Image (cartoon, rainbow, N blue to C red; front, side, top):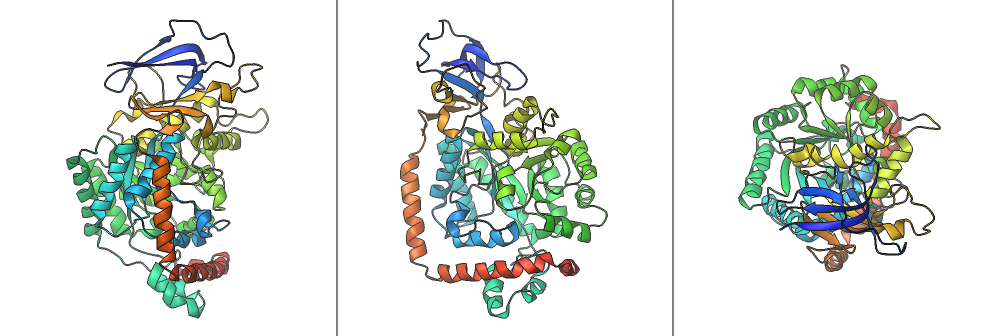
Length: 497
């Protein structure tokens, strides 16, 4: 049965086409847009009447599916290299609760497609069972996810072997740091077999419509060449996507130049990793010649503006990426400007940062919307699905859209405004994904978000209270952060590569 959604304004392809007034979206039973046509009646004459503006739903092309904000565990104002260990302060909880709460927050902010690079395993059950809980959470919330299984086999403390990194840490910390952070390498074949096992489970359990299993090598500095070679081959064999962090920080750039003098991007190309199946997160420190090669190979780059600012990583060269013809997509990386995963605010921040200064235009509206709603779909659902069709409100496209409260957006009601100028997640009234209303009147439909959060917080607080050693580990991590600063700031650290 078809459903209809009326709106005062509809932006079918923001930046490419003008807004259309008084439109009706009709969605068919298959979850696709059947028609976009004028409403059969004239718009309300009362400017305070309940009216909506329709926009394509958004895609978050790089995230980890974490719910808790890193500032809650004393990780604010730290660069990535000392920030990462603080994530271990968050004790494991029910994986369904954690995933469902995170996914609910994402869809409430207008995200239809969400990348989950699953680096934060909750533990307490076999990995495949945990992945099943995450896939069930995506199904219940109604969001599509890419589930990338984190793969790594080296360098757990710094960008060098663990024994060398430990030598740079004060002696009283070494045993605790070694025990918690040193890599316990798992054979390559065993890691890849886990990806296959999870993919088989997703298919068998009927979650494939919502969950696309992917290879998730954490970063070149954390993955040996044999592991990356095996991932490249397996990705080609199974046509399975790959999600990889690359050149996020200046120290990763320095490591890459020392370790791969012929170029880290060329190295990945020689391994066979560069293809339309690959998404690279960050690329903050990528160079023009590297971006040109990524564009030529059809790789997607997920840019994480707030995260890179939060972690003091830098500002990605988005104008240069666009000049080189790169496929660039929006990522939130579990942050957002206020650590709230507000995708609308994030896309506006990215646009204001990269659009150019004065009359110089380095990112236009059409490129912004491709960045926010179109290019990242392939990163989530894979190149073999309908990823090229989404991000536009046209007949035949997937019915993924959001309705914003026009009266709240245009609350002064002087002249019609640009809905991208001030919109944020609080203005979203309804979100439709694949024809299904997953948010209505600002509330998630498939799960009780408030109850999820309450239970999740209770579990977290109880487990922290039951583990007094958490406070000791927090003290150790702050001391480790003090030691890592001088280590990275000295050029002599390059010698450990």
